[in-house]
Image (cartoon, rainbow, N blue to C red):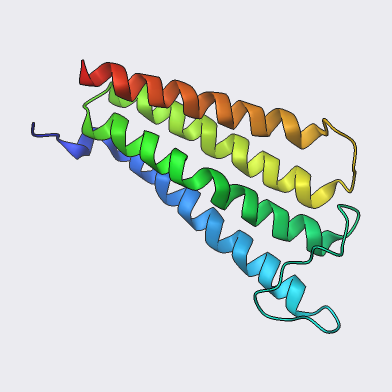
Amino acid sequence: MNIDTSSYQASLLGIGVLLLMVFVQWLIASGRKAKQPGAVPGKPPIEMTPLDFTFRAWRTHQNTLENLGTMLGASFLAILAGASAVVVGWLIWIMVLARIVHMVLYYAIATEKNPSPRSYFFMLAWLTNLVLLVVGLMALF
């Protein structure tokens, strides 16, 4: 199997943006936590609630990390299996944009309500990731 990755430029760019988002989230979460009195490196801000921005920044980063393996795995599976570059590109970008909106809403809205507005974008990214995984698996057969 020889895949010409040039047709997956949009997909690879989306993956790059996703990885950049992880770095940005880490910078925001780590920087914010370090400013807290008595901050201990590596200790999560578990004594805080979603009403505190430091907690929300940390959870946003953790949530992205929790989903990153599946996102990258489904993305590369679809690319390496030779799934439609257009479909894969659209799915990756929908997923990335939904994760960005999730991040912005998590930063902006302090709530313990469930579902919160960010929950809808979490689910959109999750469902898109599931479709991408199915597309990748179907391309194998």
